[in-house]
Image (cartoon, rainbow over all chains, first blue to last red; front, side, top):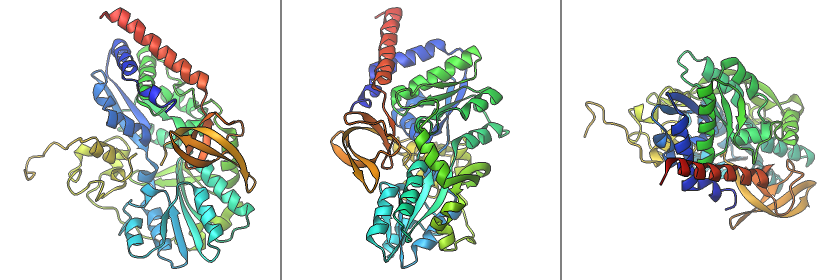
Amino acid sequence: MKYLDEYRDPDLARALLAELRRVTTRPWTLMEVCGGQTHTIVRQGIDELLPGGIRMIHGPGCPVCVTPLEVLDQAMTIAQRPEVILTSFGDMLRVPGSHTDLLALRARGADVRVVYSPMDAVALARSHPDRQVVFLAVGFETTAPANAMAVRHAATLGLTNFSVLVSHVLVPPAMTAVLRAPTCRVQGFLAAGHVCAVMGWTEYEPIAAEHRVPIVVTGFEPLDLLEGILMAVRQLETGSYRVENQYARAVRREGNTAAQDAVRSVFRITDRSWRGIGAIPASGLTLTDAYAAFDAGRRFDVGSIVVREHPDCIAGGILTGDRVPTDCHAYGTACTPRTPLGAPMVSAEGTCAAYYSAGRRRAPAPGDPS
Amino acid sequence: MCLGIPGRLTGIEEQDGLRVGTVDFGGVRKQVCLAYTPQAGVGDYVIVHVGFAISVVDATEAQRTLAVLRAMGDVLEQELGP
């Protein structure tokens, strides 16, 4: 497909790798923030082709993985109500909550449906006026404009049977949290191209300057990632720390202002808890008071749920880049994409699932059954 | 979920006050909301995320990047020899 196949050309990838080898004089550690980029890097084995010493750390950029357990448990409580049709994206259905997952609830009779777009959930509410349609609205800045438009459209249509359970997260506060962690080894970032298609990159400029890290807005194809890595390494090798845009075919500095306006009209910034990481100040979006009538959390009163994480899961260490999946005792044994213990094994954007589908195996520890 | 996919806009219409387009993803066609890409016209490539076009692909920029990479490949081959 146009602008897809061209960015997968192996000859050009070899040229980029040769250039990267030429400019690299010492080890550098970069973090790709986005789970989509993690998927490409691991699947294509890009991290294993890089010159010695260049290390990629996989960041917290999988919306499925970082949605708090509390929100999932709330969604499952709401889904069990007989009047409710609970809708979400397909990969949310298999994420384990404290006790079960949405797919298992569906098997037991709950009306849980996969939608491609939040607008499909609005259409469902229109065609089922006798039911309550709830959309589990998660995701980063890329998804927020779609959810904002769904809420605005439902308001325009006068729907009283549509609501959203919102758990949006924002990338720049997460990057700052990673950089402020005492164990941080990240020296440069590949910023998520599609987040920046919406938000632009002005928010990244103070982060690059304050923490002295290059930040390269990067696309998702193999050539995009190799060029993004090369641009970040060139900056590190020359001691410069600014925001650069590798993904110029899709991203402009100011981003998509129409989408930003819609998000601002429906959501406001709030503190948010990230699964596996914990609370990050001002790192999420919630509905403004003007749209509070569309808040499923209020409509169904699910504020007092006590959550329980699986004790064997090391998702927190994975999401902050401190650990890799093959460090985990449960990886590939008790925890697989068919039986995930934690969120990073569920979505194709999750680091554990990316490792698993690429066939990366855990080195047997002493005492492991052979 | 977070992935955006490029596709070609093949038609535009109005539905319930929203601008909606048909986008062809290499043979698979889907209806897409164009509220955030008012500049997109039939024939343009757009990046689509959860049913919304979030960006129009700049064909000139796409070709320019590829041209730079191809030139780099040639330069490297010349420098590194056969």
